[in-house]
Length: 447
Image 1 (tube, rainbow, N blue to C red):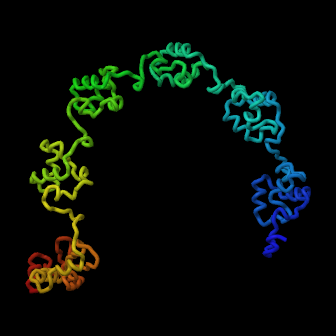
Image 2: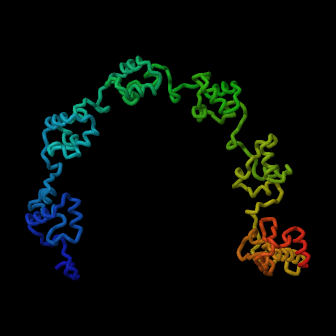
Image 3: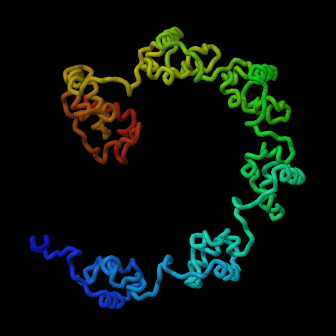
C-alpha cells in the first residue's frame, strides 16, 4: 500500500519501484544515442522515459554494476578522477615537446581533442605533491612566477638600479617591462623589498626625490608665515607658484592636506588676505539679517542682486539668503525686502465658488463694458478673450461662467474679419471692416 494507491493516482515512490536489471537498463540507455549527463537529464524529465528505467541510475545501480556515465550511455568517457594518467616526469616531457609558450596556450590546447586521455587538463592539481613547480617548468619555458622567484638582496638590487640613470617611476616601469631587466631584479621593488629597506622610488633610482607623504615640512605656523610673505591673492596664484620651481621643498604644494589637523583654516588665512569661503562665514540670524535688508529700501530681487554683488554688502549678510535661511524663516524676496510681494506660485487664492461670487455681476457697469467689447469683437469675427487660460482651477469655464452668464462663440462669416494674433486682417470683400475705422464703425453699429 502506498499514497498513490491510497489516493488512486497510481504514483509509486522511487524506493518502491521495480526497475529493469542493470544490464538491460544500460542497453536501453545506450540505444538512446545520448552524449552526456545533460542530455540524459533532459530525457528523463520528458514523458518518454519508461517507468522501469530510473532517472538516477548511479544511485539505483550503485552496487549492481554502475561504473560511470560514459559506461551507462556508451560514450566511453571516463571522469578525470577515475582516469589513469602518466607519471609526472613522463607527462611533463610530453608537454614540453608541444612547444607551447604560455599558460594561455596550454589552456586552449588542453581543452582541444588533441590532448590524450592520460595527460591531465589541470596538471597542478594532479601533480601538486609529485613534482609540480609551475607552468614555466611544465611547458619548459623557464618562466618562474614572481612569488617563486629569488631576487638579489636589496642593497645590491638598489645599486644596480641606481646605475641605470633612470629619472622617475615612469622610466622605471618602461625599463622593467623590457627584456633588459635581469630576472633577479624585481619589476615591483616596492612590494618585494617592503620590509627589507625600501624607502621610495627616489631612493631606489638615486634621484633624491621623496614622495609628498614622506616629506618633512615646516611647522604650520612657520609655513603660513612664509606664505603670507608671498603676497599671493588666491589658491590659483599659490598653485602657479608651487609649480614654478621657486617653492622650497619644506613648503607643501597641498597645505590643506598636510596641515588639515594642525591649524589649517582656509586660503584666506594661509595667504593672509582675510578671505573666508561662504560656507565658513558667520551670518546674522535670519530676523536680524532681514531687518537689515528691509532697511535698504530695495524694491525687488533684481535690485537685491545688484546690491549683493557690490562692495556695500557686509560679509555677515548672505548674498543668497534663500539658500542660507531656507530652514530658518525664509518666506520669499518680498518678505526679505519688506515689499509684501508674494510670488504667484506661493499665493493662496480663494476657492472657485467664493471667487465666482466675488466677480462682478451682469448689472455692474464694468461687466457691461467688458461684455460690449466681447460682443463687438465677436461680431467683427474675433474670438472672445479666454480668462480660463490665465486663471485655472476646478469648475472654471470662462469669463461668462465666472460672471454668471454665458458668452457664445461664433465662426466669422466669409465677409467678416479674421483674428490673426494682435491684428485684425479683413477678408476680401469685407470693405475694410478689419481696419481701425472699420472696428469703430462696428462698435457704433453695435450700440
